[in-house]
Length: 168
Image (cartoon, rainbow, N blue to C red; front, side, top):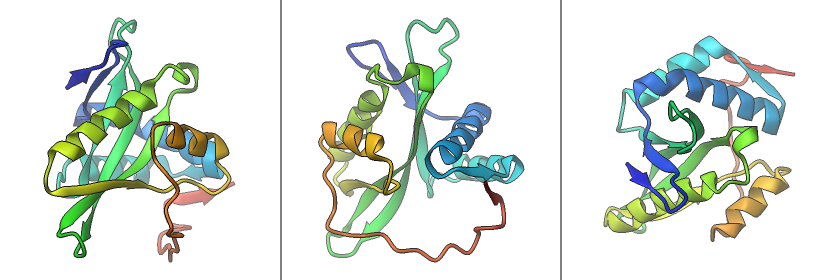
């Protein structure tokens, strides 16, 4: 757990955070891709992730003025092995900050936290993230914290689309 100069508390997520993580992920999918996620599948997937640290981890951000330290943001890290570097990239995923808590430095605090952790771990060779092509607001935020566009374009074959994901 860490607290930045603004008092934003960053801590590892735990299974008790599942409801807010599910709510945030569903809101993010709707906001960024206009997709309605199946909440039962999302909940099972989130609990599976939280219960399997080999997949990665979530961190959550809490603001000091919230009496019950209500979660205001989240960020998920997954791992990618790089044989070129003999080390792991941390992939930033599932970034979400509650709309009424945006522009208060919450993402920056989460990014600074994982950046510091990653740099201190000799097994980590870098941080990567992908962002929806049309999400220019998020791209601007990511560039402000020092992330730069990669030379790579992501391609995919999604075997689950249509199973657990409802398109609008």
